[in-house]
Image (cartoon, rainbow, N blue to C red; front, side):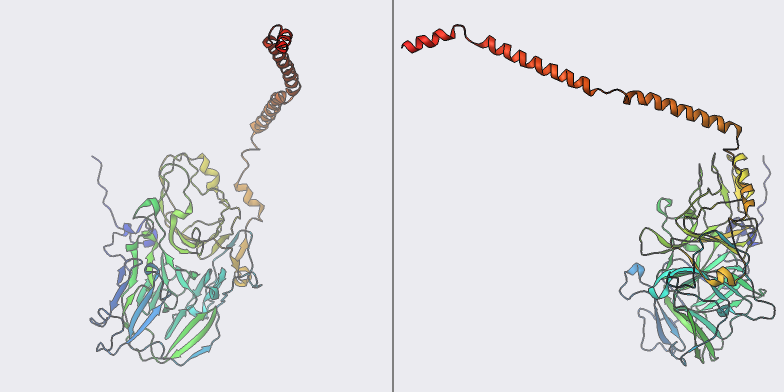
Length: 544
């Protein structure tokens, strides 16, 4: 009888093959201090004080708590029910109570117009790679609002259509300060440093390997969790679209990112609400500020479906080929955002984490390809899926639409030699994400020059050492090609014999002879049918 090996829970969430290796009875990691509500796409509700949330109505005359009703309308009022998004909040003071907007200076590099008419953004037709984006320098204090840098995008938020890629690097928490993106939805993906995010609806604890989405118009503050001295990560912003789960098709009702694994906050208010606050607002790519004498985090109760949420990427229920071939990367889609083309998404956010590789008799690595989509790849931790041996967590790589690309690692050479009928675990102890869009990315000056970490690929001849020409270099290839040439020449000679025969003259002579014979036969038949002595009959008749 085989010995029984005791299962020991994994303690390090960055070393798990799947979240279940942690053997947790809670849906959060051990260091997450907050409570959440699970689900996706439905409406939620929460209250700090029992009874603060109105029952059976949205705008009560008086609930006894002195709260103000405030609504966020995310969609059009008359949008279909499944697209209608809004939230009602019941707060100590309404957001309208402020001292006006004012212009501010910012250290962020913000770009919003990604149209060809904007000469400050350009395409990158070649492959590109960035070393880790620089964290704030020693002695420099940068918070989230000043640590935002736009990398690339397509479209314009003023047109309510498009996408933008960002990186953030900061080392200071936002204190008595909040942020509001009035342009689009932020999908935030930490790479280093744990984020303690406070929103109007409650708190989210987001660490590398997790993502969070904060919808357009929701106010929030980003702070460094205890033990984190600096933070760096990626943001995907969508305009005129909302993040949603992809359809599963023949997979059925379960797989990929499952709805129950998305976590929404519970209501929370600041202890001291009577403190001055600055609200930094991003509108059409420009930062302005609202000054007020009270905290924006004073929502005692709320209900709706415009609620920030987070998701742990280690919970992704991956699917893959279990017989042959390499499955398209769309099978790794965590969230998608629709475009106005019903057949093509605006953006897909993809996961590449640990999984089993079992396809038999197949080249299991991604084959060389020229996709129509633009792809931005980033490794969060570990040795991820880089485009070169120098690819590091905290950087990024890019291939534009129809740009030929693939791997240049030793694995691409060794894979054909391996016995691939055996299952194996791949991509262990790492996490890689990819942002894929049907749009053509235009890159900012910060991405092309300002960050100082970019280098393009394809110009180093040494990469070809990784991809030997196994075909033309083989001694038998010349013999095979010579034989093919001879076979083609012989086939051509055989086929030409059919084209050398002209049947038309023979057919014409045959038809002429047949026509002459037909005339002769007709004349003979007519002669045989004439009555004998026909002339006498005429004479006799005339005698009458």
